[in-house]
Image (cartoon, rainbow, N blue to C red; front, side, top):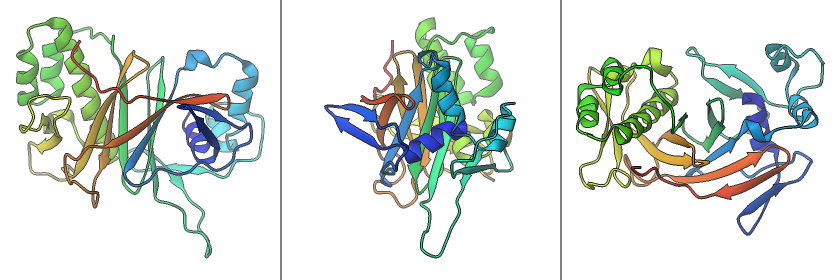
Length: 281
């Protein structure tokens, strides 16, 4: 899904009418996000039901990407080439020329068995994570949290008496931490969850409106604090967290992030959806 999402997001021409988006069948340029925007696309795999549509998605892949999927039909690549950093995070390789300098486009992907999401921004690294709201754990929530979270985060979860609310808050916190380490480009192995705390700002007692900040718990090596966060609900069934670097953006650390969310069936239709901030159930 990586090459498909990025190629589609860069090349599709979108027409917006009354908050509904419909794409043309030809892949033509889509306006990139402004530096103040974060674009989040998601697709529900069970809505992609026809083999002909899947074949069109395959046609967007380069030969190497088809080999990765064990698909052996050879079709010319569609311009975008990808590489992975030392920790496995994918990124775009741009072909530069004297008369064209590519935009500093960044993206990240996350998926569950029932939803795939891609975040796209210009000018700074990004990390996203999605989790099912009904996700269950084999072990006790607090026991699991003690293995991976900071002491402060465990204390916050321990103070929640309702088991269902506690489970949802655990999932939201997990998405925030996952999005952060993916934005760093290191993943969990390079930045274990218990080496930093996710903390809501003290200025506002309502977590949904509070600034989210990073507190490193040891001498920082790769842990930085100049990040913006947002949390949204997708399809009424998933929590998503977005983390992006905010160097040079107005408002500084904790400033609100403008998130534009689109639900898509690729090459068929797209529509804008409200960015719903998670609330306690």
